[in-house]
Length: 432
Image (tube, rainbow, N blue to C red; front, side, top):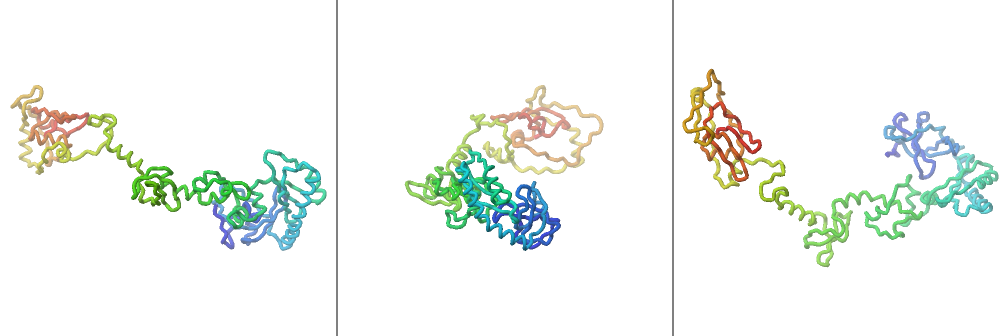
């Protein structure tokens, strides 16, 4: 929520008016299209459902597009000097009204658990509101006391029960820090507070140090809680084993705002910033995971299905202890060489089924077109290795296994030569 408190004037079409009925209280939103001259610090008259006409003070403006489910009401009119004077007169009668309330409650009896805190008149004295606190488990019947006070003070009387924090807000005073209480100075709403906020900030859980004048957890515990949480995410936890420039030790204290920890190393305490810390447990776990073999095949080859980057032929040969492949220059084929290639067959050593030395393949009838420039496809490391071993023979079947690669040679027409396919660990029909 963004309340504009520095604007002197605002556009009613884009902004709404923020009004508070207390010195420090909840903000209510009003449309001021009929009174565009209103400024911060002005007083206005608003008609309420339960407490009748009330006088409020303009605290600021807020953009209409930022309202999320908030109700925007209509102003009755700006307050006049006569209204301000009348309001001051009735404010002076609030303390005597509170004294009369306490005396009548003592005379009637039955109001022992209740504590009457304050009395508030509206600006014209038509409604008197009595604020009291009591045990939430006990239901207090104030009907008799209301009727007696209304007859004596000749006005409409309302009773409203409030909590311990609201009591401290109304009574004002100083906090444990020595300055005026936050609730009576600038807090308009009370946030949820838990004991975990004190633990996250390293505050002692002594009730005298974490409770306020109202007997509840101090509101200031929420001020730096988020900063502590974000800072602790980057630091090791207590009793964590860490490495430091002084040696291995354990964390005994965390300094979130200093971005460091206190480590106990050989009975000596050292303050170590976050940049000099090594989380040993995480580091040892990563080191063990990197050194461990495949969890599915501990004997060697990994069959877990993880995709690995394919290395070059030179890297594969280096791992197997083979010499590097010589550089081969692929020159473009001339038309005459292309014509001779159609008439020739490629002959290899015997090794395939039904194939022998000197066997010839029947030439294909009819015209046959070959490209002028033959592109050399990419060779995998296994195919490149076989090419070096077979010295240009035609390989009809290549089987790649954990122990190496084996090949069979046969006579196949040139038109049967296809690019290699390394699917299911088999490469077929490729002239190497």
